[in-house]
Length: 473
Image (cartoon, rainbow, N blue to C red; front, side, top):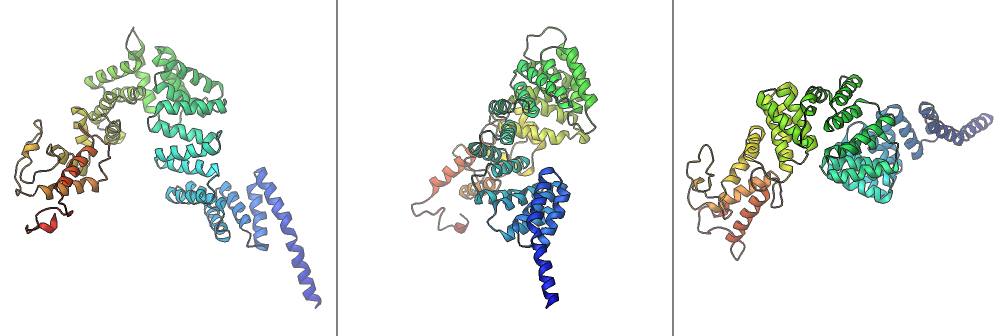
């Protein structure tokens, strides 16, 4: 009996320690002593293993120390013990994102939002995941929702501006980064990004002012010096531009993504700044890049034309020239063909169609599926169908080689239906705006669908019931 009393007394005394341990762990978290907090949380959970909040807080602490496996396990345990907790769900999402599991992070943040839709941070963080997945429109939607809930949310503004920039909506991005700077005047990232937008829009005085401001605020890293060098170059101040390119290269490490552009533009500074010129800077870049390309100075041509594209981000001519330079150089170690492909498809995204030269660039980099779909689009009849017995009638006059061969007459319905299936199988619909030649793919699909509808009988059927291939129609 005495022994039993001793055991109960000892147990009671230990359980009484739990509140103090909780308090100690929380204080250590606030001070940044996450390792010490974890030790206290371990003790709490030994004594009281059903407290979901302790698993959650230990998971947060483990994430801070880099123990992502432990943090993931704790977040999952917290969700198991408290299935309605949005916070635990969001913690697991953040851990998955840190582990580069963007699918899992997106799913968990979406669930956290479902549980607590008015929590701005969840919208911000899901937007960040979407940004990492190159889902820029999704990022814009989530950041706009976050700002609706929390108008001064700095990260939402930064990610929104970045997504707008990636979507080439430079005016909107400039407005967003300007708002970010107004709310956080000393945030150098926002100042720097606003300068990038100003530069892309041709506001070189404002861009130079922001580059100077970023440096004044302490952002003396390679990116800012590179950006100021470009602004000085645009202003014709070649000596100063060259000095800033040198400073950027001096400060950059071996992984700096702008090293090659900086070296190329530094070498081109004299050509771009010496002597009088009435041409706008963007046009000077494009003209000089084409001259270098014609002379075979491919490395310098690539960098000058890439900069021309940065100053004329919606110019089909700039896309065409830059793609031509990469394809002509075609250095596998420099990723030229991959870059040319990106440029061609970005030009498609402008929605202005492709010039004959850009169509040739597309033919050099496109997939066999796209090549086949473009061939079909080229051979569509004016009324929207495809003729089964010959493609000659719709073959373009400039086509090389000319099409030949004939199929079985009377099968236009089948040919057209199969062609529509091919387009839809590649995710093109009547609403598609991708324009690889002279008209959007959506117009091709829409014309075919309209022709098919015109062939439909009153009872909803297609084709001739007496035909041996009626069921294929």
